[in-house]
Length: 174
Image (cartoon, rainbow, N blue to C red; front, side, top):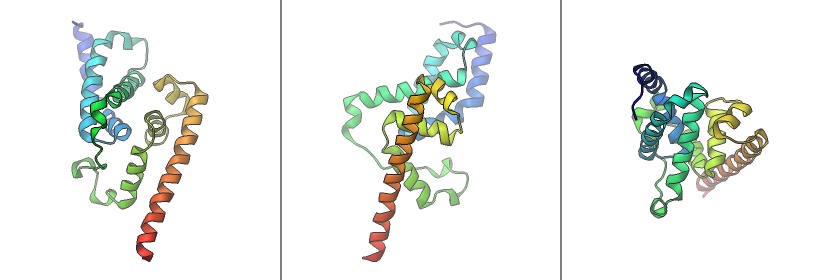
């Protein structure tokens, strides 16, 4: 597909300014840096093809919608279900060593155990500080669905984090 020079420049600028945020979002949704990179690459390829359409809609919202769909498509494939690795954050991904605490790892591990759509809603609402309406627009969901996924996701995270906390304290007592 061939785009005009203006469209090419707009797309390059979009990628340059949003690439890190897309990678971080992808990592938070899928829990693996390598899969996140792959998903972002596929997303950018799809976004490039549809770039002329983005003049009428939000390119940010559209790119995140594509990204969530790409990640969901990968998870549907049987070969992906073979292995599941623990969430690891490379040192280069953290601002400083203090942020790589046990609490951060517990939250990321719990986040990785949520269903895809709940995880995407929680990440958009609380990591990216999006409103219910913005999240609904990005994921093409109703605001009621976003609210329900938010509530269920937070409840699940509380349960998982409480479960992790009780496991840590049991080990200390023993």
